[in-house]
Structures are given as structure tokens and as C-alpha cells.
Figure 1 (cartoon, rainbow over the protein chains, first blue to last red):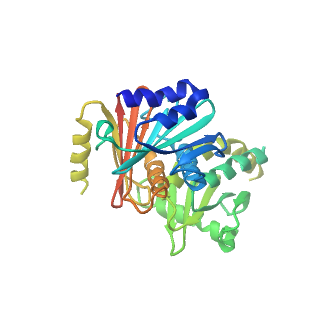
Figure 2 (figure 1 turned 90 degrees about the vertical axis):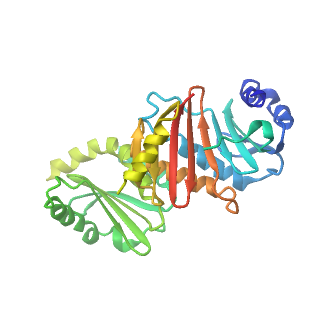
Figure 3 (figure 1 turned 180 degrees about the vertical axis):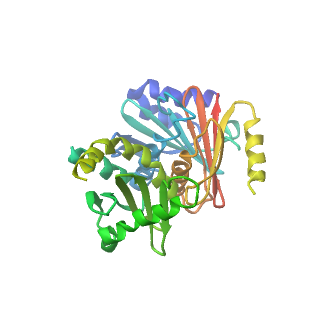
Length: 114
Length: 125
Length: 89
């Protein structure tokens, strides 16, 4: 839960976003993109990973078109996560920038199980 | 006005991977607006091909299920989705692996653009 | 024919917080939708999983979660079928 709050915190304090992304537990890489999808900053496994950046930009664009019936007067999603068995990507939009963190799924923040 | 519509459709083409072109024609296959990528098969963008839709929906309507709305044809390399917005017809040409449901979902984005074009076509007929 | 899927969808909807669900085939055509979900969204759901699968093609398809303060949408592909569940938090 604390982990989740910290991720949300990214959005609240954009100036120190990079420093905060570095501190996320289990983080193995991050990307910071501008609105057009150009890489502003990156590190770890996602260093200069423009391919992933492109794919995630595509995902964000698609996600904005989702179901209007289930979500009337819908104001957009705040967080997008892509969960694999051992790791996950967490994407947040804030201050006209796109924050992407790749992290390992630790025991205390198990991916949503369906 | 047409340029605005073209711009919107061009954006839609980028959104759906595998979608090659969107054509807005009248029921005889005469193009009102064509937005193509270089992958679009030239033969399928001709009136001779597109006008078969008019015949096909006339036949489809005889099944007793009411007016036909959409026609989806899949071929070995391509798929064609055509929508009945008479007097206009919208045709989408895409790769056979393209997401058909996603193409159908574009209807709600294109429909609001058609009002002005429909008036133009109706005037000339 | 779709009785089994109907039953699965009813099961899904009986979970607390779930407001709707929709299932799509590999072409993005709707197999079924229940609750507050439109059949039109089947295409977009298929497109989202296709796009996410490109991220790490060597792994099996991921679970995609979209969230805001009040709602969650969970999407996953299994075989050729893609399912999406809409929830209120």
C-alpha cells in the first residue's frame, strides 16, 4: 500500500520525479518521456529503450479510447500497469510527462491476480 | 472542410495497425474522399470493386433481418469492411490480420464527419 | 452455444466491485459483454493486448491494468480470447 502511495507521489512532485523513481523498491529501470513520446531521461534496463517507449505511447493512445459506456463522463486513467509474472511496468501521466518504471514484483506488492 | 475530415481519418489510420485505407464513396463506388497509405491495393480502391457493396447489401437485406449495416469480407491477404451510411458507403481496406473489431469501432469517430458530405452527395443525385 | 460463456460472465459480475465485463476473439470481435460494458469496446481491448504483447514477445501475454481514483479496468489475453473486467474501487 505504501508502495502504491509512493507511485502516486510521482505525480505530485514532478521536479524530483527522477530522484523518486530511483528510490522505488524493486525498480530495475525507468523512462521519462515528453508528450510526443521522446525520451527525456532513462536508466537501468530501460536505458535509451525507444522501442518500449514507442509501444507504451501506442498503448496510452489506445487506452484513451476505452469503453464509454462503462465509464460515462470519464476523465481518463491515471495509472497503467502491465504485469508479467516476475516483473511489471507501471506508467503514470503527470505534468505533461510520461513516467514509466519497470520493477520486480516483490512479495508485498503482488500483481493484480485475475 | 474536406481537409479537416481527411486529417481526422489520417489520424485514425495511424491508430489501427494494419489498416491500409479508408474510402468514402457514394453507392456507385464513386469516391468522395480517399485516404490511402502506400500499402493499399490499387484494384480494390476502384469503383468497379466498391460498387459491389451496393448489390451485396441489397441481397443481404432480403434475408428478412432488416437493413444490412456492415459487410466484412476477408481474403487471403486483405480484409474489407464496408459500412452502409446511404447515400454514402465507408470502405476500410486492411491486412487480413488486422483487428476487425477495432475497425468496427472507428464507426463512431467517422459518423459525425459524414453529415456535411451526405448533404453534398444528396444534392447531386 | 454461448451458455458457458454466459455463466462465466455472470460469475465474474457476481464478484464485489465488478460493474461489467467483455470478451473478444482474436479478430477483436465481441464474444460477449455483460453489465456496464459495450460490445463496441471488444476491438479496442484486443488492440490493447496486441500492443502490450509487443513489449516482451518472449513472455506470455501480460495482465494490463488501467486505474484512476474510482475505477479499474483489467485486461488479459488467454489463448485467442481476450477478456476485460471493469471494476469500481
